[in-house]
Length: 246
Image (cartoon, rainbow, N blue to C red; front, side, top):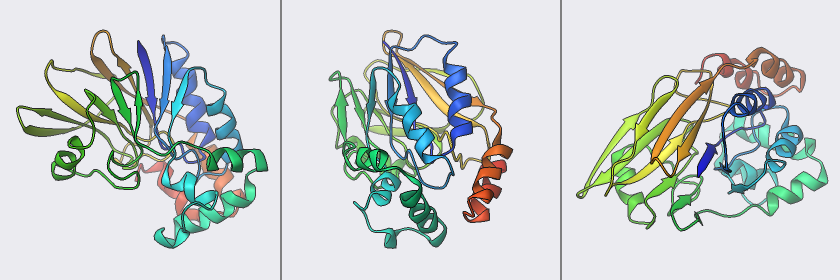
């Protein structure tokens, strides 16, 4: 089984379309989305429609998805993020607001082999930054792999013999063979707002038969995404950061 694993689109249609075009050249059996369809970007309706049209899709909600439909207070967000959430709530049609409200809370187990979550398996809003956080997270799932998002950094943590090691994923087409007897926490990075100083959209493909995970980066028309953000009168910093990957 080959899984497309992707996360944190944040209303960036141009980045999503570039990734789906790239993926169309590859064999994919199932799709896994790790949350945050919306927030920050200026194309929330279009992004939601494209994602829900994917076949064999498993997905969980993100913190921005919750906030936009009123399931979480915007008081926990910084002013820029809060402004984008308020704008998105007004821009979304009723159907898509209802869809966000009905998204699954993580963690979610798929095929008894994969756990997926937005932040961490013990708290959907928690950021896994570093091995200390990863050690805690490994205590909360039983499957060989847990895919997570939220941080916007492509990363892989391996637990073996009670030791946890983390690896920051840099570059394109990086393939990692998963070791027998080990368990993994894997973040594919962000499609719509990378924060690892690489502005290219990020995603991963997991091959469960070969036990390999491959990380990809894709160029996209970030200038068009920026133009839409500015045209919508969203905070200009949301446009500026797209070209910097921060």
